[in-house]
Image (tube, rainbow, N blue to C red):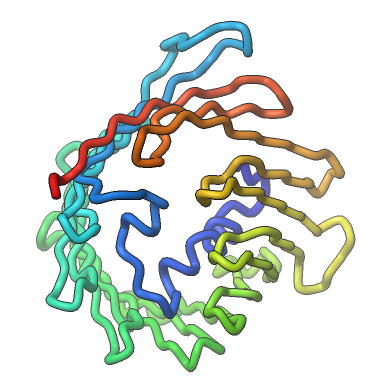
Length: 275
């Protein structure tokens, strides 16, 4: 999905169930993977047009290794630069440390949680000692999440969140830290499996020219097969996804079409733990 004007708001809504959800899902579930997946190696190719196959103009990849209980151990991503991440967990399978290495630069993210498993503190340490900042998050029964930076006393953020009976984020108010931007509200609707079906994003003043609307569809296995994005300018972007699957039911090839034109082809290699 290409979000033209307010990418952070919409991406936050998409990942809210992972960040603030009540259900504790492992990474197999978050990635909609079936079986005991040991690793996935995903490669992205650009296509010249719908009549040509695998024109290797660019080749991006995302390689992930999982534990035998479904949690991400390492991730190697190549897009505009190379990232390597290492994940560590506590005895409750809560993420406590994520180390990201990017061309010699290392950032450690350390996480702390309350007794209910909600994140309450996140520390950033760059190259061990050169930079350090601490961000605190207060969760007031999901009604309000306050985040502030120990290093910058003038920076704080208050996100107002409402949840439905299933624990999905149904409404989210994101106040841009930059005072020149207006706060935006997102409202979402989900299916019984927790997949987001519709999202409406608009400014707090609810001006008609600020409304953006998203609609998603999924196959019976929960893979996204289409998305529709209505822009502020009134144009409509339709994306569709076509899959091929292995015998376990995980996709190994995905084609991405934008308004009917083939844009990208994803190939995914999957290994499994033996029973």
